[in-house]
Amino acid sequence: MTLEQIFTDKTIKAKAKVKQIGEWLLEGTLPIDELMVFSEKQPKPIKASCIEAIEYATKKQPKIADETVFTFVTKSLKENEPGVKWESAKVIGNIAKLFPADLSDAIKNLLSNAKSDGTVVRWASAFALGEILKLKLEYNSKLLTKIEKLADAERDNGVKNKYLGALKKIKK
Image (cartoon, rainbow, N blue to C red; front, side):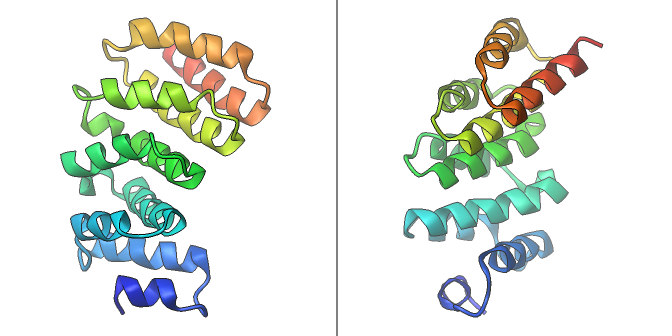
């Protein structure tokens, strides 16, 4: 089955599509760069599903992501589609530890999305920023204050708890 076929097959539920593509990535039967190229030519909801498959795979095996994947999801944080934003943020949360020297653009885009009207976008941004904060890198001197302010201003408890959990872990 090809990517085109899986996305046009109405008998397969969205989560099953994501899982199957994620498994292909993990098995190495689908090159991750092929999925990224495919996603760029798709409507935004399908692109979001492609990034969700990358998130599924990187959650289990972060090292399948290379610099190209990191750059792709960092840029995708700036898109208008909420699903693309939150899935990209979750991928960054999964793989940030692999790119400690290259996080400034990701941090900038995540901080922008942390002010989104969408709760899920804010939650995913909080997750990724928290994962970056836990790495205890040079970014923390500026990031710590920003995350504390975001946590104080956050009105959704789920999002606030993502920030507070990261802050608690770094202050141990």
